[in-house]
Image (cartoon, rainbow, N blue to C red):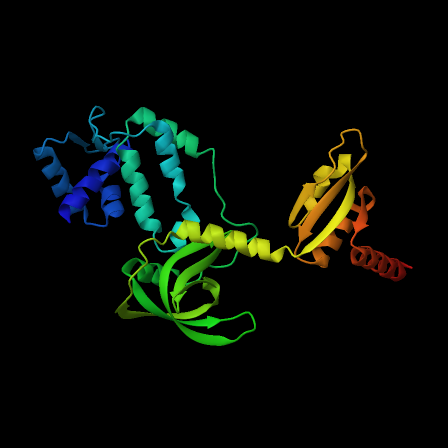
Length: 316
């Protein structure tokens, strides 16, 4: 335990030009007297810790002393320090360890690299969600711990129709999608996906499970997400869109579209579109307005005409 604290102390001193024993005690969660003993131990071990009392004093390392961090290029360090999304890491209960990792990495870098990485990181901020102010599900740390320890769990799960059913699951991992957390778990020898916000309660059992050795969480999620997306695109329709309004099409469309005609001289472009249902198709048509014409199917034409008449009737 003391060895870990001494290492953390050295790395903290490397990451900060000057600090105080009070700040070190607060950072490492020990008494100031313990910090003084640790500084003495480091000095006896040959680590050049400099202390100065009084106004303008403090604790620092000799500027030429560094714990070596070999094998990393600057671009690799930038990517590593950006890799952990702060909000999501905190939601699963690993915020404090992540901050310690960042401190240790920064502390092990030479001053020039520290400044370069800090400047680069100040240029990028990753927000995992859009208009999402929902609190993180409180069961997240329990789910992560159970998955890491390969322990079975019992979950009271609330379905979309408000049914509550108890399920015994083998948790394989967690996925964060646009700020929403999902649990990937095995039940009845099939992999399934559950929304964590619908897990009303979670009980971790003593019994463990054998994880499939060839299971890959990222591959499972990408294939399942693509299959789900494909299954939703059941409604197909065709529009003629003004060429100069194609940017509006990209902005308003929901689903997937293909430009069928590519004659650069034509004013109108034929576009084949796949959507979930007729509703999103109507939203796109009204969003484009006079910049589009409905080619088919007939039910979309009819629905647009009927809706337009109802809107006009209400405005008269």
